[in-house]
Length: 198
Image (tube, rainbow, N blue to C red; front, side, top):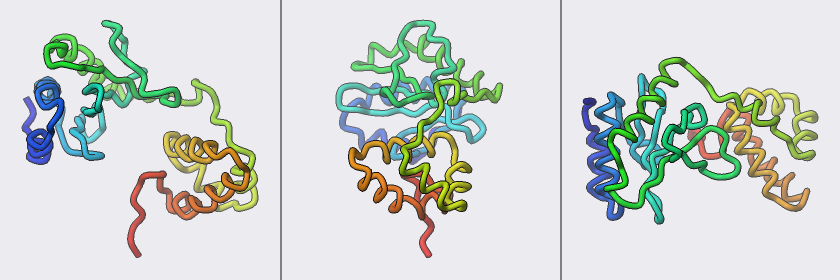
């Protein structure tokens, strides 16, 4: 069993809802040999520094999300998609502590560990090429540095920007969003990454 992280201890003690569920999931993940830390404000579990799973307490349920969930065999028919734009992640959802069957959850965790050990990655392109809005295509052609920086981003970061830009109905709003995000893209940062203070 891996050691408990004090930051996660503090998170669990502050949790008002899903505390028992979080603690049970945490115990299973640590028993499987994963390391834990607090990332994005939630208990995240890693193998050799690579993110494998994260516990997500929501209003309706507590979930265990696997970062490369699409690569897992859904042997018990329990994996759920995060949403229509999610390509890689899949999660198990629980509404009570008795629903969390240790053997079942551990089987998914062991699969996720095997995926990470094998160095497998999700083929985002196989799910369909990312269609860029016309305004972004024009901006990338107009500014070569911006084009190089955008294409150097990870697939997930590029996708997040495209979804953000496409969320605007009007072309002028899409252009404004692109202009506002340009410094972040040039810095190699995603939508939610912190920019270094200067």
